[in-house]
Image (cartoon, rainbow, N blue to C red; front, side):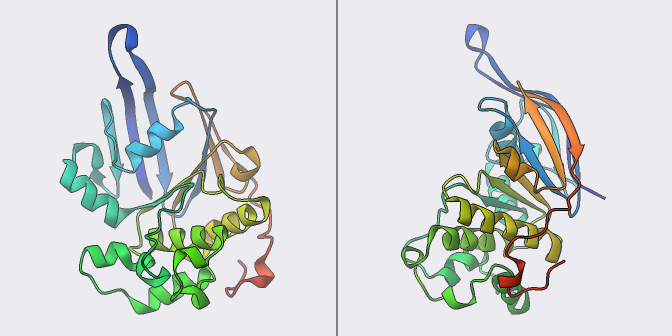
Length: 242
């Protein structure tokens, strides 16, 4: 079952001599539960695609459908609501609110909608990401890797159709980078979360089940990986390895 469908998606900035074609008739489909890496050099169009999938930008042409909703047809207010409820966003910088506890940061999307959390699911997310002992701490009291875990938990709390991770390890050292990739893999496997990971790092991309390569606004590669690499720190986690 396709959870994401892009049909002939193009994005053009400027006009005349200043015209830049960031995406050119991109066609892409992603099934529910897939872990997909999108790779490409700077300026390839991968960030533009991320912004369109995250409803923070619109395509010049084409349609983008997430869970049967044409997000390219949404107005600004509708897009903001859809983004909060259906698209989890994880960036290189954690964007946690410094004056709120980790618990409240994670629950923020629900609090904005004045909705009560599903306590069982909240506990599952927190346990999966190893944050049980950090819920009453402030972001400044956590390491960079722990803050990124909290950002991932916040992106998962609404059970989004799609989690978009934009260079989530770009601000971390090797150990924490490995840890965050392991967390994303566990979220994908244990929570059946569909993930699109934007990266320029081929080693990180190889952790995904599928690698899509973008070059000059075109998809030039789409291949499956073997997916045989084990989760490196699985014995230290509070969830079962799968």
